[in-house]
Length: 523
Image (cartoon, rainbow, N blue to C red; front, side):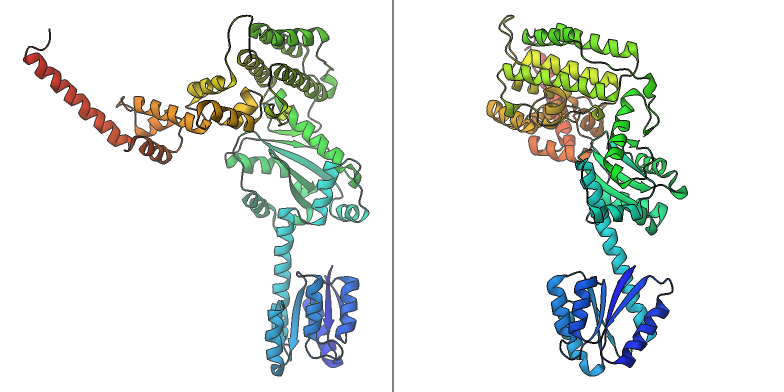
């Protein structure tokens, strides 16, 4: 219910205005408070915090302008409408400079009042929508606090949550690719699907870098909500998975519901489903699996000796056991991943890499498309740890910078960043790697990669069967115009002019050879 405070010292004018408001408010959504002077009005304002104040200018004790100033000292968002006669127009103009949202001339006509209240309600809807989209409203804050802390409690916020969400589900959206939709546009598309009223039973949060969290009040109209969201995101080309919690009715179970949704989303590693419901994983078919002590010791020994083949073999054997026995529980899979990564960090530390050099990001099961993807990740990191740290027993040494350089040389036609190297290849801190590369090579990693791409582009342009677009793509550029700009900066001419100049040089060379031969210069 919306609270409106009407301030008017003339009884006839007050009664008339109250009647007009009642006639406008056919849905009975207004609670109207009334006061006959500024001081009384200010006390009501402090007590009830009305969203709209409609006040006359000329009143005994505290006039409308003084009331407006007092309200603005407390709150900048309360809408204040000034009521004034023609003779008070200059006062009304002054009131606008102090933040009055509108003014009405007496005697107040029904259509003018209706227009004023329409603007008030429209602005209120806009402000509420902005608050919901940015997570500033009380209910969204309650959800965020519950997700962060299992024991969080706030009586007022909990009551507000209960009023909106009687039967609710929480879903977690995980973006597997680098591409992210625009949040504002995404929420606008949802509004198109369900209408503006949907905001009353829906909340949106960004809980982590790769995660969006949705809370929806479950009713008949929302029964296909998650399938529609999935289709909407897929139609825009986003690689997403959605994990959905079970149905909940208790406001105290928000943290539990979020954990359910997150855990369910992780089950994507066991199949190709994009929408995963909490009841979907067959828990009775799961089993407990923990890294055997024997395999743990073998892995540590293999890494210590920098034995790449033995490291790969240990990891392959562990995952062969997992595949042979079926799906292990998600808690066990998370623990297994953590155990491997702890061993890797210990090995890096023993190899002379300080803590600042080790990755600070948290690797989760969510980041993998399948069990095989997780296995390959662990093998790749283990192999790189073996090869890039000192290995005195076989006389080989390939330092971290050379590993980074080789990776650029082998993958220059792909999307390569220090962030990707840090997370997926070297298992080290991004900033540390960037600093180390500049220190050893004298240029940034991105500049080094560009040099390799441009060298490759120059060679590819010799093949006239390839278009400029194809050369750009084969050199790691999806945007041809960007490729042309970079190429021109490095070579001083466009790829086309470079290719044409090569043609001229070849023609000159052939002509020169013919002349030399004709003059007896060739054997």
